[in-house]
Length: 595
Ligand code: GCU
Image (tube, rainbow, N blue to C red; front, side, top):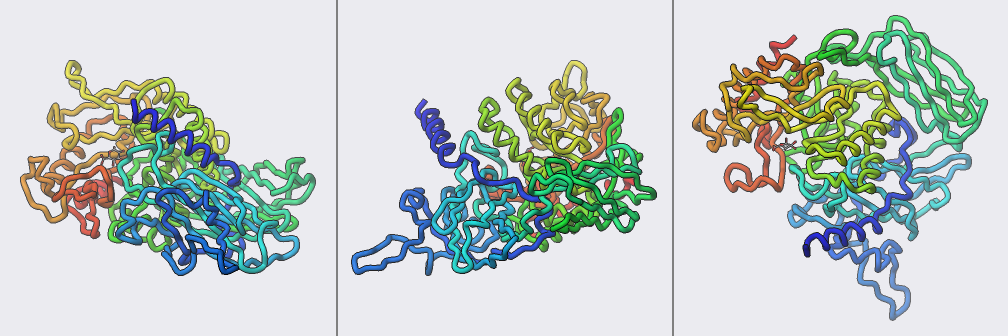
């Protein structure tokens, strides 16, 4: 009972502390705009007892008279890299969960008729932003971007920016109290000053019709509700240059016919230069065009049935024991996925940074993106539902122009209940309010073996809300074989496409052992497990994709074994030091056989 009271108190305190009020929806394609990077070494203060805000340390006071003194200073103390998690920067911060303050100064050119925004790619998990001694914004959610307009709050010289970051897990958060990855905290992605014209192109969404290969739908939104002003959309290679007049909301919504589009696909990841311009702004980016839809038990990409040769990875560089955040990190992770022969990546279990998403698109990977609705979420909590809705909207708004994104995932291993169903339906609605074309999916761990029927079955009516059903099933690891793999028949999600979104088992790289003993934690056992699962997959009639869990060993506080794990989940096909295990070669051969 005591713990329950404490948890409720913590929720109340945290929600008072972090109501997500000021952060704004980010403008489309920040990386394509006029940017000043604020990345680098920031001053930092570890505020374990969360005293800083009460002591107003964001004022950055300095002693003036003989009797003044302040028991803090941002200068000459700890300095942390931005972007990066804090856990990997100092041994004593490995498990740190609490508040850390970041601060830095910056100059800003105050040009007339220009606006200035502060942009954060992500801050994990919640934060408050202070500029020149005033709170200007807050955000909750460790994996989506936000921005705050500072046009009228900024000086030419010596602006003092303080960011109060907290990564304490709470029952009402997303993810909540326990999850199988490291609780990295910090300013984990890029920080920019973004300069725009007074009236700028705030958002646009340009994509091929869900079904037609000759119709492009386009929406453009200006930052101000100015009617009857011109907006031009150009796709030079398709000989498209059309000008439209905005409506009373400062928007255009239109479609136009295109001929001979080379549709994007993993085999041919064609991207077109797209230029959107208004009377005062112009923005360019590369956009791909493809069709994806479901019919019966098949997924069709550009009118052809598709089999997803997928893999998952966390946003982590194992050798650095830290969050991935850079283009170089994206190259490392995606190159290994390409070497394995994959055509799709499940970006587990949260929206990953834009470098990864954009490079994956250029390299020809379809993507599944999700927010961390991971197992135990407070589905009955309306505030949590609202947070999740905002989080998934931020994800969809950021990546809606990425044609590589084929799936929006709304849950991972949730248990059936009416509150859960309502919560997930709300998330699906939030996705579809922005984008009606992508496939909605979710991963379940509810498949069980029916001994009477001698068949694998699953009973969760919620799957009818989905375009594609995904199943996490650890045969040979968490579940032993009730029948031999060649006799393992599945009757799951009949009439819908099914993908195995997670399967696998642990192995310590280099450990040779009994190929039939799970606790050997050997590469030999992991290889046997993969052989058996690949055999079972032959007997799943509506199987349309597989995704081994997982590309690399990854860090998790769940994993206690002192020799085999030491705080690592060892299900990687590749070890934390980058060595490919025996199972990697089996998976590579399996994918190479699928054309
Ligand atoms: C679950 C979960 C993963 C987890 C994995 C495991 O299916 O979705 O996040 O890491 O199992 O137990 O290794």
